[in-house]
Length: 289
Image 1 (spheres, rainbow, N blue to C red):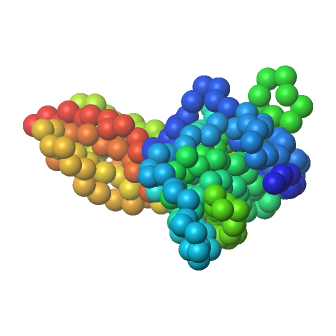
Image 2: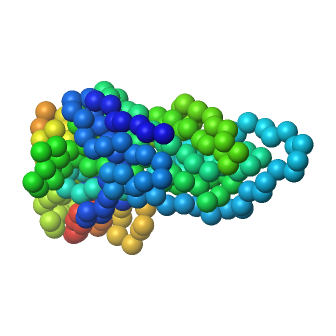
Image 3: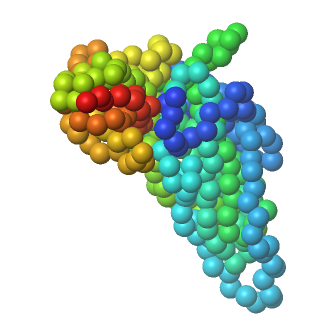
Protein backbone atom coordinates (compact mmCIF):
# COMPACT_ATOMS: atom_id res chain seq x y z
CA UNK A 1 0.00 0.00 0.00
CA UNK A 2 1.28 3.43 -0.81
CA UNK A 3 -0.51 6.66 -0.12
CA UNK A 4 0.57 10.06 -1.37
CA UNK A 5 -0.31 13.22 0.51
CA UNK A 6 -2.87 15.40 -1.26
CA UNK A 7 -2.75 19.24 -1.60
CA UNK A 8 -3.47 22.20 4.38
CA UNK A 9 -0.70 27.43 23.08
CA UNK A 10 1.89 28.27 24.90
CA UNK A 11 -0.57 25.56 25.59
CA UNK A 12 -3.08 24.78 28.21
CA UNK A 13 -3.13 21.04 27.58
CA UNK A 14 -3.66 18.77 24.60
CA UNK A 15 -0.60 17.91 22.54
CA UNK A 16 3.01 17.95 23.72
CA UNK A 17 5.56 20.36 22.31
CA UNK A 18 8.98 18.88 21.65
CA UNK A 19 12.10 20.55 20.23
CA UNK A 20 12.72 18.55 17.05
CA UNK A 21 10.81 15.27 16.78
CA UNK A 22 10.24 13.37 13.60
CA UNK A 23 7.31 14.37 11.40
CA UNK A 24 4.45 12.34 10.00
CA UNK A 25 3.60 12.62 6.32
CA UNK A 26 1.31 15.59 5.78
CA UNK A 27 -0.17 17.96 3.22
CA UNK A 28 -2.07 21.21 3.06
CA UNK A 29 -4.52 22.63 0.58
CA UNK A 30 -2.12 25.42 -0.33
CA UNK A 31 0.91 23.22 -1.10
CA UNK A 32 2.04 19.59 -0.84
CA UNK A 33 4.51 18.78 1.90
CA UNK A 34 6.25 15.59 2.90
CA UNK A 35 6.12 12.18 1.22
CA UNK A 36 3.88 9.15 1.35
CA UNK A 37 4.30 6.56 4.07
CA UNK A 38 4.54 2.99 2.81
CA UNK A 39 4.19 -0.37 4.49
CA UNK A 40 7.40 -1.89 5.78
CA UNK A 41 9.38 1.31 5.57
CA UNK A 42 9.51 4.30 7.87
CA UNK A 43 9.02 7.13 5.38
CA UNK A 44 9.06 10.85 6.06
CA UNK A 45 10.67 10.09 9.43
CA UNK A 46 7.43 8.69 10.88
CA UNK A 47 7.80 7.41 14.43
CA UNK A 48 5.68 4.34 15.08
CA UNK A 49 4.94 3.07 18.56
CA UNK A 50 3.30 -0.32 18.86
CA UNK A 51 1.07 -1.14 21.80
CA UNK A 52 1.33 -4.67 23.14
CA UNK A 53 -1.71 -6.85 23.92
CA UNK A 54 -2.41 -10.56 23.32
CA UNK A 55 -0.96 -12.35 20.31
CA UNK A 56 -3.14 -13.88 17.62
CA UNK A 57 -3.21 -17.57 16.84
CA UNK A 58 -3.70 -19.50 13.60
CA UNK A 59 -7.22 -20.71 13.04
CA UNK A 60 -7.91 -24.44 13.22
CA UNK A 61 -8.60 -26.27 9.93
CA UNK A 62 -12.16 -25.78 8.74
CA UNK A 63 -12.72 -22.68 10.87
CA UNK A 64 -14.66 -19.90 9.16
CA UNK A 65 -12.93 -16.61 9.90
CA UNK A 66 -14.87 -13.42 10.40
CA UNK A 67 -14.08 -10.17 8.64
CA UNK A 68 -11.77 -7.74 10.48
CA UNK A 69 -13.36 -4.89 12.39
CA UNK A 70 -11.96 -1.46 13.21
CA UNK A 71 -13.83 -0.27 16.25
CA UNK A 72 -12.46 3.00 17.55
CA UNK A 73 -9.76 5.66 17.43
CA UNK A 74 -8.40 7.53 20.44
CA UNK A 75 -6.53 10.70 19.56
CA UNK A 76 -4.14 12.39 21.99
CA UNK A 77 -5.68 10.48 24.91
CA UNK A 78 -9.00 12.23 24.27
CA UNK A 79 -7.64 15.79 24.38
CA UNK A 80 -7.54 18.51 21.75
CA UNK A 81 -4.26 18.95 19.89
CA UNK A 82 -3.12 22.53 20.45
CA UNK A 83 -0.33 23.99 18.35
CA UNK A 84 1.64 27.19 18.84
CA UNK A 85 4.21 28.78 16.55
CA UNK A 86 7.61 27.69 17.84
CA UNK A 87 7.74 23.93 18.35
CA UNK A 88 6.55 20.66 16.92
CA UNK A 89 3.63 18.96 18.65
CA UNK A 90 3.64 15.17 18.92
CA UNK A 91 0.49 13.21 19.73
CA UNK A 92 -0.59 9.55 19.59
CA UNK A 93 -3.44 7.96 17.68
CA UNK A 94 -4.54 4.50 18.81
CA UNK A 95 -6.68 2.32 16.57
CA UNK A 96 -8.47 -0.65 18.10
CA UNK A 97 -10.22 -3.51 16.35
CA UNK A 98 -10.48 -7.26 16.07
CA UNK A 99 -10.19 -10.26 13.76
CA UNK A 100 -10.01 -14.02 14.29
CA UNK A 101 -6.45 -13.97 12.99
CA UNK A 102 -5.52 -10.71 14.70
CA UNK A 103 -4.76 -7.30 13.26
CA UNK A 104 -1.40 -6.89 11.57
CA UNK A 105 -1.31 -3.43 10.01
CA UNK A 106 -3.21 -0.15 10.10
CA UNK A 107 -2.99 2.81 7.74
CA UNK A 108 -4.20 5.97 9.55
CA UNK A 109 -5.34 9.16 7.79
CA UNK A 110 -6.16 12.43 9.54
CA UNK A 111 -8.34 14.82 7.52
CA UNK A 112 -9.06 18.43 8.43
CA UNK A 113 -10.62 21.64 7.13
CA UNK A 114 -9.39 23.13 3.82
CA UNK A 115 -7.42 20.09 2.73
CA UNK A 116 -5.56 19.40 5.95
CA UNK A 117 -4.12 15.89 5.70
CA UNK A 118 -1.70 13.60 7.54
CA UNK A 119 -1.07 9.90 7.00
CA UNK A 120 1.10 7.21 8.52
CA UNK A 121 1.29 3.42 8.69
CA UNK A 122 1.61 1.23 11.77
CA UNK A 123 2.44 -2.46 11.99
CA UNK A 124 0.68 -4.12 14.90
CA UNK A 125 2.41 -6.47 17.31
CA UNK A 126 -0.97 -7.00 18.95
CA UNK A 127 -4.18 -8.69 17.97
CA UNK A 128 -6.44 -5.76 18.80
CA UNK A 129 -4.65 -2.40 18.84
CA UNK A 130 -1.78 -0.35 17.55
CA UNK A 131 -0.63 3.18 18.23
CA UNK A 132 1.19 5.56 15.94
CA UNK A 133 2.42 9.10 16.57
CA UNK A 134 1.87 12.17 14.44
CA UNK A 135 4.00 15.31 14.46
CA UNK A 136 2.53 18.66 13.40
CA UNK A 137 3.89 22.18 13.35
CA UNK A 138 3.10 25.73 12.33
CA UNK A 139 6.56 27.23 12.40
CA UNK A 140 9.15 27.67 9.66
CA UNK A 141 11.98 25.17 9.60
CA UNK A 142 15.34 26.86 8.87
CA UNK A 143 16.68 26.07 5.43
CA UNK A 144 13.51 24.39 4.17
CA UNK A 145 11.74 25.37 0.95
CA UNK A 146 8.47 23.93 2.25
CA UNK A 147 8.66 24.43 5.99
CA UNK A 148 5.16 24.59 7.41
CA UNK A 149 2.48 21.95 7.96
CA UNK A 150 -0.45 24.10 9.09
CA UNK A 151 -2.31 27.21 8.00
CA UNK A 152 -4.97 29.07 9.99
CA UNK A 153 -7.68 27.58 7.77
CA UNK A 154 -6.77 24.08 8.95
CA UNK A 155 -7.82 24.76 12.56
CA UNK A 156 -11.02 23.02 13.67
CA UNK A 157 -12.45 19.52 13.79
CA UNK A 158 -10.44 16.73 12.15
CA UNK A 159 -11.62 13.20 11.35
CA UNK A 160 -9.79 9.87 11.35
CA UNK A 161 -9.98 7.16 8.69
CA UNK A 162 -8.35 3.77 9.20
CA UNK A 163 -7.55 0.89 6.86
CA UNK A 164 -6.89 -2.26 8.87
CA UNK A 165 -5.25 -5.46 7.64
CA UNK A 166 -5.57 -8.81 9.39
CA UNK A 167 -2.97 -11.57 9.57
CA UNK A 168 -5.07 -13.77 7.29
CA UNK A 169 -4.94 -11.18 4.49
CA UNK A 170 -8.39 -9.68 4.96
CA UNK A 171 -8.74 -5.92 5.25
CA UNK A 172 -11.37 -3.35 6.15
CA UNK A 173 -11.63 0.40 5.55
CA UNK A 174 -13.29 2.37 8.35
CA UNK A 175 -13.92 6.04 7.56
CA UNK A 176 -14.66 8.45 10.37
CA UNK A 177 -13.71 6.17 13.26
CA UNK A 178 -12.76 9.18 15.37
CA UNK A 179 -12.48 12.94 15.48
CA UNK A 180 -10.58 15.57 17.42
CA UNK A 181 -9.93 19.29 17.61
CA UNK A 182 -6.71 20.65 16.12
CA UNK A 183 -6.52 24.17 17.52
CA UNK A 184 -4.42 27.31 17.57
CA UNK A 185 -2.76 28.01 20.92
CA UNK A 186 -3.92 31.01 22.96
CA UNK A 187 -2.33 33.01 25.76
CA UNK A 188 -3.55 35.60 28.26
CA UNK A 189 -1.98 38.34 30.38
CA UNK A 190 -3.37 40.15 33.42
CA UNK A 191 -2.58 43.23 35.47
CA UNK A 192 -4.59 44.38 38.49
CA UNK A 193 -3.85 47.84 39.92
CA UNK A 194 -3.31 49.81 42.04
CA UNK A 195 -1.30 47.63 44.39
CA UNK A 196 -1.87 48.00 47.31
CA UNK A 197 -5.37 49.42 47.29
CA UNK A 198 -7.71 50.74 49.97
CA UNK A 199 -10.73 48.61 50.83
CA UNK A 200 -13.77 49.78 48.89
CA UNK A 201 -11.71 51.52 46.22
CA UNK A 202 -11.67 50.47 42.59
CA UNK A 203 -9.29 47.91 41.10
CA UNK A 204 -8.70 48.14 37.35
CA UNK A 205 -7.98 44.77 35.79
CA UNK A 206 -6.52 44.71 32.29
CA UNK A 207 -5.12 42.03 30.05
CA UNK A 208 -4.74 40.80 26.51
CA UNK A 209 -5.89 37.66 24.72
CA UNK A 210 -3.71 36.48 21.84
CA UNK A 211 -3.67 33.37 19.70
CA UNK A 212 -1.16 31.74 17.39
CA UNK A 213 -1.32 32.85 13.78
CA UNK A 214 -0.21 29.84 11.74
CA UNK A 215 0.14 32.01 8.61
CA UNK A 216 2.55 34.59 10.06
CA UNK A 217 4.22 32.49 12.81
CA UNK A 218 3.35 35.13 15.43
CA UNK A 219 0.78 35.70 18.14
CA UNK A 220 -1.91 38.30 17.47
CA UNK A 221 -4.80 39.81 19.43
CA UNK A 222 -8.02 37.75 19.38
CA UNK A 223 -10.97 40.13 18.96
CA UNK A 224 -14.56 39.77 20.15
CA UNK A 225 -13.99 36.90 22.55
CA UNK A 226 -15.52 36.49 26.00
CA UNK A 227 -13.07 36.15 28.88
CA UNK A 228 -14.02 35.56 32.49
CA UNK A 229 -12.55 37.77 35.22
CA UNK A 230 -11.94 35.52 38.21
CA UNK A 231 -10.91 36.13 41.83
CA UNK A 232 -9.26 33.83 44.38
CA UNK A 233 -9.11 35.08 47.99
CA UNK A 234 -5.82 34.84 49.86
CA UNK A 235 -5.60 31.41 51.51
CA UNK A 236 -8.08 29.82 49.08
CA UNK A 237 -7.42 27.52 46.12
CA UNK A 238 -10.68 28.28 44.30
CA UNK A 239 -11.30 30.96 41.67
CA UNK A 240 -14.78 32.47 41.31
CA UNK A 241 -16.01 34.28 38.21
CA UNK A 242 -16.75 37.94 38.96
CA UNK A 243 -17.49 39.29 35.47
CA UNK A 244 -17.34 38.41 31.78
CA UNK A 245 -15.72 40.88 29.39
CA UNK A 246 -15.33 40.79 25.59
CA UNK A 247 -11.96 41.52 24.05
CA UNK A 248 -11.47 44.65 21.95
CA UNK A 249 -10.50 44.71 18.28
CA UNK A 250 -6.89 44.22 19.38
CA UNK A 251 -7.64 41.52 21.95
CA UNK A 252 -7.35 43.76 25.03
CA UNK A 253 -9.46 43.40 28.18
CA UNK A 254 -10.35 46.01 30.79
CA UNK A 255 -12.81 46.34 33.65
CA UNK A 256 -13.04 47.83 37.15
CA UNK A 257 -14.10 46.03 40.32
CA UNK A 258 -14.38 47.00 43.98
CA UNK A 259 -11.57 46.04 46.36
CA UNK A 260 -12.98 43.83 49.12
CA UNK A 261 -10.22 41.53 50.33
CA UNK A 262 -6.67 40.39 49.57
CA UNK A 263 -6.41 37.96 46.72
CA UNK A 264 -5.53 37.06 43.14
CA UNK A 265 -7.15 38.28 39.92
CA UNK A 266 -6.94 36.49 36.57
CA UNK A 267 -8.57 36.22 33.15
CA UNK A 268 -9.87 32.85 31.93
CA UNK A 269 -10.62 32.08 28.25
CA UNK A 270 -12.35 28.74 27.66
CA UNK A 271 -11.47 28.48 23.96
CA UNK A 272 -13.40 28.06 20.70
CA UNK A 273 -13.73 25.42 17.99
CA UNK A 274 -10.49 26.68 16.42
CA UNK A 275 -8.56 28.02 19.42
CA UNK A 276 -7.43 26.40 22.64
CA UNK A 277 -8.14 27.70 26.16
CA UNK A 278 -5.90 30.04 28.14
CA UNK A 279 -5.64 31.25 31.72
CA UNK A 280 -3.56 34.14 32.96
CA UNK A 281 -1.53 33.61 36.13
CA UNK A 282 -3.12 35.24 39.16
CA UNK A 283 -2.07 38.83 39.96
CA UNK A 284 -2.11 39.47 43.72
CA UNK A 285 -3.59 42.66 45.16
CA UNK A 286 -3.12 43.69 48.78
CA UNK A 287 -6.29 45.33 50.12
CA UNK A 288 -5.72 47.56 53.12
CA UNK A 289 -8.26 48.96 55.61
